[in-house]
Image (cartoon, rainbow, N blue to C red; front, side):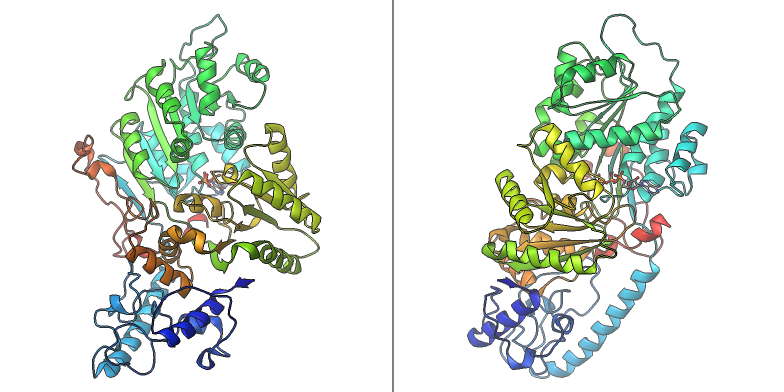
Length: 603
Ligand SMILES: Nc1ncnc2c1ncn2[C@@H]1O[C@H](COP(=O)(O)OP(=O)(O)OP(=O)(O)O)[C@@H](O)[C@H]1O
């Protein structure tokens, strides 16, 4: 049986009433105490603190969500645009509502102040049609507002028009001038925000300018001028397709090589000439070792989803490619790293690969776009299938003209993917699956079938979490939540792309405790409604010392590790500091806990 957050609030409220504890454990009981009956879920969630003080108890009592509002702690006396505590009950509220005689009057005042601040915050949100960015480095080339302001060459400009890109996205506005200025760049921007074009345009424009460069002739070795590394075959193919579109009629040749596919066909492609090579690390190492590819002439090196490559254990191969083969050293090539998430490890790798680089963070590092409506529901392990079925049935009812919208369902294991695909199929939902045990051909067929809508449900493991740009994915379901919040960010990022909205539903249960805190934080940052029970799990987990490995660190504030005392090779390069808050008085890098105006970025 599934338990919606409204049920859970009711359940735990009744538990609290009985036990006096604020333990968040949702149960299967359906009993709803009288004071919560006939209340719409949203009013439960945003309910003001209890009407009467309970002396000597500094927890928020039953009758209101134990975590106060999702702003954490009923007693917050000022708007907190940053990180709001997940103190249990009202502890975080500096005295709370009910720990002193006379608190009731003050409570009412605070309540009205809170409401006022909430309104101000909503207004601010509406007005702040700006995108926060943060650029760190010296002599940072200024951003542009239109493609016309950038010298990409007429052929590329025409391709931009063919793609119907009217305006550059925020990451493109910032990254393209930086890259055209010849600077190394580490760029972090939300999923679906156009990072591929942000690194492809300058590379193509640069190669067009350098086509006169003499490359060695003869022999079977090819000498690409640019290398784009990506973690998965599918993503490499997608980057290749995009880059080819952007390079159409420019004379710049783009080739892709990846494992799991016959090498001969790829070699034939290479022999026809290559300027930009898109590759997965393993296949590239193989080709360099066979002397079929030389990296000696590389002028541009881009690492897309670099953090994922580290997660997948590619670091030795990447270091081999970048540091131990014949690639020009750091400083004699232009290097760029792009991702939506940048854990510390990758920032440290960056400092080995990049020279005098600019750190660009558009929005909050590791944040999700608020174009995605995120829902999290408490679902017991054994109820997941029937709950998924309910979601799919509900979705079918909303579909217009029998046109299926696409649903991507993430599971943790390959076996789980096969079995769920089969179960869905048997139950009348055309589904296919993609995971690491399927052959490359099967993976490609599955993706095609999903994209075309022939099988509008794709069950996937994390191989489909990164970078894939599939139009019309309306719903991402985290049937099994990942252990890492960054993986969650990338998974839900398969919807809500290119300025469109999307929906992401996650099934949460006791197996996902370590994700409670970062998930609640992330949802809050993205202006999502955080279920009260999740907030309570989050506070319980943080009190007990549990934390997701990325729940702290660069996400908050998007810190550039070069600022750490222990790691200051680049300290000299600072100068810009926090360059942009957009003039609304919100500190850059803090983003105010929300990320407004994604839509505005695309108008
Ligand atoms: N300037 C633009 N105007 C309109 N659409 C754009 C623009 N730039 C890119 N897009 C479109 O936005 C979508 C997302 O782009 P892209 O795949 O590069 O995102 P991303 O930031 O790399 O996402 P992820 O982090 O998931 O890899 C693509 O369909 C792309 O064609």
